[in-house]
Amino acid sequence: MRMVCVGNLLGFYPPAFFPTKTGADYDLPTDLESLAPHRRDLTIFSGLDHGVKGGHFAMSSYLSGVRTADAKGMPEGNITLDQRAAETIGGRTRFPSLALGSENGIHGGCLMSWTRSGTRVPPISTPRELFRKLFVTDDAAGIAALNERLDLKASILDAVLGDAKSLETRLGRRDKEKLDEYFTSVRDVEQQIELRRRWAVVPKPDPKIEEPENRDFVADLPVMYDLIALALQTDSTRIATLEIGGDFEASAFGLKAGYHALSHHGQRPEAIDGLMKMERYQVEQWARFLGKLKAVEDGAGTLLDRTMVLFGSGMGNANSHTNSHLPVILAGGGLRHGEHKAFPAAGPGRRPLCNLYLSLLHRFGVEAESFGTSSGTLAGLA
Image 1 (tube, rainbow, N blue to C red):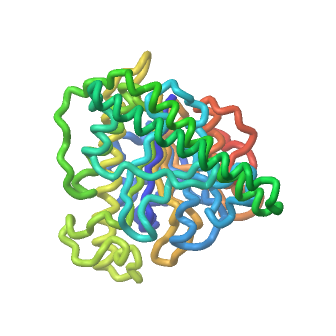
Image 2: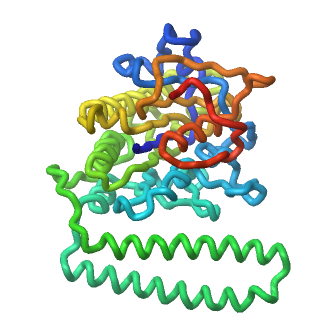
Image 3: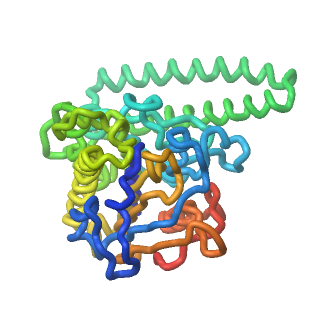
């Protein structure tokens, strides 16, 4: 089983995203018209969220259910869905997970993927960088240089770890908790070093395509999707995240205002029209990605049958800075699809979005009793 999580930082214009009908006979709103060929392969959810507030500063809770500011009070911190799944991969793939996105844009770039220790996973930001990471094998000199760099990193870790441990007996409770977080981060880096060393001598697959050029994130988006599909197909990884940030250039659509400014449209028709151009393009490229996965045979089915593909945002309505009623679509994974499932925002029928995430972790093979703010699993998917 594979997992791909796609999100943007600014949500979607709700009237153009959420169907007005529920069940299998739902309508496809303007933003989602390109998903028509995949209706039977996906589920649209409404009424799911994490119950958090904070506008842009709560967007980082999209895949975790936990704001970074609240992570210390949670048993597993603000670890995200992708990283929780990646913990079970070990060294079975060259990359336990891949995080893709931009380091530029509002609030410091990619905020979607976080480790158990509360460390942001830095993204791969261009198609060329991703291509080289996946498919360009180092020669003997390159491998030797890599091992030297890894040896240096390991020796630095040993030194700082020794210094940190010497402090442990002299610290108070809160400082010891901070030190424990540090030790967890160090162990994460040690595992990464060991994995990189182990895979350094294994030749990378030949994708049978030319190395791509870097352009801008709008033009690069379909290429990033193509490379994710190749990464899954070659089993280079089984988990990927892709974040579309605030630097998604509106000028590529002939718009004068920026993406962030358009998301704060104030109900102005011309701003909403511009925003929907950008949103429709994002959905169109996701639909194209689903088509590529569906076209690849994998065992008795297709690669889409073996890949859970999540699409959405941690922002419900950027115009009002709300993080409720999040836009969420799930495709593939051999799950039961073909509906718009609507849940009440309050009362006994309310379900946290993390209930869906716990269900996805179970489907992935993770034996977890809870995840983030979950109250159980989400029924009706299997």
